[in-house]
Length: 632
Ligand code: ATP
Image 1 (tube, rainbow, N blue to C red):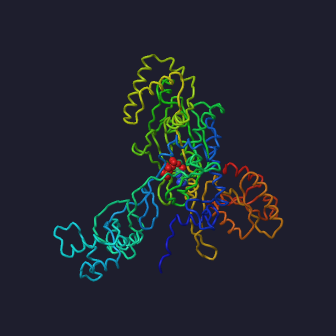
Image 2: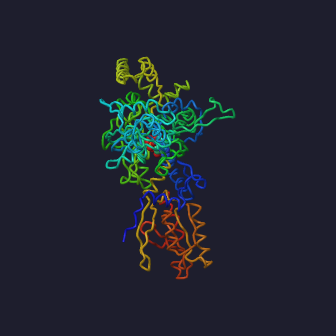
Image 3: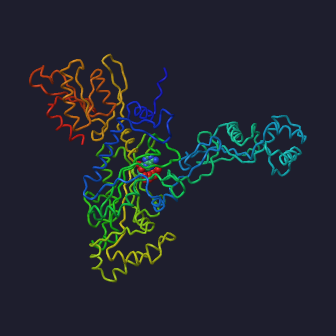
């Protein structure tokens, strides 16, 4: 007997998400819209819990981070200053046959034999022309002659000369001289390449293509062909990922605005207002959660790469290292094992960067994503943006591969400086401590710092700034003014939701009382993020006293945590339903609760734990005290 086919994990997850109301395709009744997803009842609760845990960890539990809630559409000049208008693009390539669009750098590399054709001729026109030129070949011989025809042959035959003349006089409407290539995996016959090539020439109005001059060459790891049919892709072209719209009724080019592709820029644009209104002093951070939009070339992997998604971003502003050096004598150097638990005055960008990597890792651990499912990618020099000093991607082991969940970048003072330059509004802060520290420096010390900065600048080659700017920057710093540097932990809420769903997904085989085996799903969410924290059931729904008591328990709990009341089906079925929803606790009200088995058990319930099926007897009055610390 053949074994049932194993369903890939990702398919199971997508199917569970739809069946249980975590995630639905947007606009599904109209066939869906690619790259857009809706969250159902359980998904909406899960996402809200993730948002809340992030917000709590990043701002409410800290004295040095404040929140912001900015608009999605902002002045378009913001996106010019940030560089998004000019450079926020992905390379895009189209299949020349199907017109399907690919992100050129995401096409799977392929190896094999490339068949290239110099063009194609329309079959019936070719036969008529061959007769006129006196080529005495039948249809199949003629087609083969075209396939092998070489215009550069050293000693052309009489037929070659006739073909050359035929091509010279061939009616333009039946001839395409566009070269086209097809990649065929090793071992596949040339017919498969010819079939795809003919499809290509049909798109160029050659109804019955006869292929001209076939040549072959080996290639390895090429991204230039459509992995689905082997057809050649167009040359990659940059494609700006920002969605645009028009603000106002005239809809001219001057009214063009963008849906934000990230939440971070609003934080930079409002930096001064926050400084002036919040009494925060550098080092401090501003965080924001909100929608972002990117017209991704190839949205894929369920919600992982969407066109509309939510980001959770922090911009943590710090002093330039030179200011720390003046105030503390030196800047703390990081080494493996350095204590990062409490920020110190002598921390420069490197320690702050390491600190945020640790903080973010602690956050993921606190919602159940441990070191077994996380990984880190420290970007090397070639991958880093020119202004960035370091960037680490926190990765999650998704079923489709280990991919980015969050990026943590040390971005120098690039962002605020860009807005200062473009808006012509100073983005500097004045720091009395820094002024005082430099006041104690000798002229020689200051001259040495200026010389060092100029040396560092010169080493940047064509990215170096004019030396007068270095003088001006040092002069301001000595007076206590600087543009803060920034550390940016930037996470995707939807990617995190997908990660916790994938991490929670568990299947176990159960045997029922009749010995039948079935596979059941248990979503083992950390109680802190579980969409529903507790299910409340009366043992039987046709006993009014049980129902009334269960409702009483439900009313008590629902004021403090997300609870779900269910009286349908057997208790086993109700547990199974909550296991699939990821509910960590279930409570059953039974006859003991009503005092029918004696006073000792009166007003106690059965508390059942999702992960190990353990059941315990708990007093109703103890429930909140027991559950609340575990779910918050
Ligand atoms: P990628 O390389 O995967 O496109 P990115 O490096 O462009 O991501 P950032 O611009 O650093 O991403 O955005 C920060 C975070 O926002 C990412 O780590 C990710 O969690 C989330 N994010 C970015 N693009 C998308 C998207 N298209 N769909 C869902 N989440 C996204």
